[in-house]
Image (cartoon, rainbow, N blue to C red; front, side, top):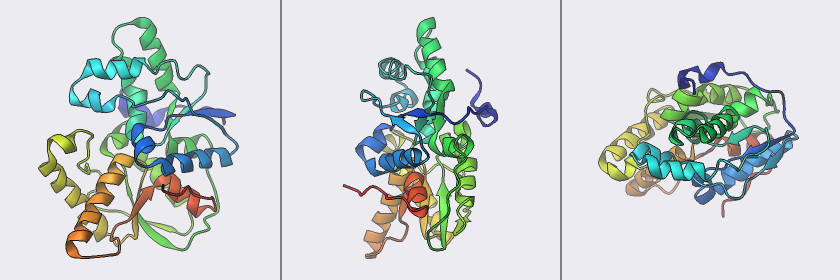
Length: 271
């Protein structure tokens, strides 16, 4: 597999009739409305969405924590989920990067498994990337003027260029102003199991991130990575609680929900 630094130079296919949707475990378990809104965005563009029922975690937590055999089991169990030559769309840059760049190496030396993983990687697209470069997403912004800040996970920036596609999609919304913050490229402190193993460091990192986002004056934060979304917004909620604030000082939502709502779609309700 090529180096992730070359990910921005990839060739894009013509508009397909259908795609596979790889939801990610965080979306499935914690922010399902983001997944539903991503599917609504795709279907509204005339794309048939196929959801493989046996999908699970991409294996990233085990892989980045130093458990390669456990990660391999997770990956190998899913190599048969995408039999048709269709794009695989992932509403998370970090998980998309795992499929695209790391599945081939995680499966080991078996030629057949490596070939399957490499083929999957070549067909994997982060949601914003797919909307922008494959579907040419361009919808009228029906929302009121608003200033938002964009957060992209550190691994998603490096491996999938999500900061570039995210900025471009937001720029296509006529009533949205993007506020840039001076900690944009820094990790929010989530890092999968990093936040569990090093909670004090993680808290310090996300506190810096929240302060930088608030300093922009943005009304909310938008991101395409649910791990970061949960980490940032829950830290902001904790600060609001400690300060006795009843109104959220830094609400946030997944980019899919933001795009769908701004362009007249019906967003899924949080259960």
